[in-house]
Amino acid sequence: MGNYNFKKDLKIARKTERDVAKVLEEKWELELLEINDDNKYDLIFSDTDNEKIKFEIKEDFMCEHTGNVCLEFQSRGKLSGINVSEADYYIYVIHIKNDIIYWNIKTKTLKKMIEDEKYFRIVNGGDKGSNTMSYLFKYNVFIEDAKKLN
Image (cartoon, rainbow, N blue to C red; front, side, top):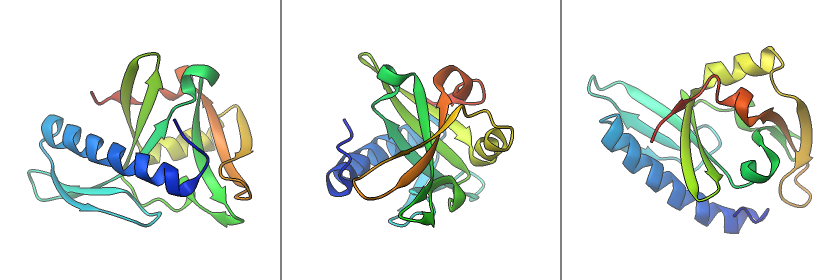
């Protein structure tokens, strides 16, 4: 579960990124090129045509309890998340009951969902003092435009 502590959550995120990378290598026949450490993307792969594909990986432990999917756009007074991402795709790892579902969605689709105001609320959360702002999407609205990865 998320700790609202960047250092603790980073350890969980790194494991999740490796797990997602394995699924992408197996299901999409991609080759992992890089695990990235900035806010532009998390993973970059090469496909069979040697085209590079960038992924942002997000993990949501609260969806089961809230029915929402969270998408960050600002933190510590600066643009972040979807506003700075260079990822082609977002992969959301959603924990529901005893299941883990990987949802894949194009970044441009997420941006269109924001433009169309498919989110139902903007919230302030994240680590203490981070003043992280995020869009909240109802889970059923979010998955209308996403595809299962696993």
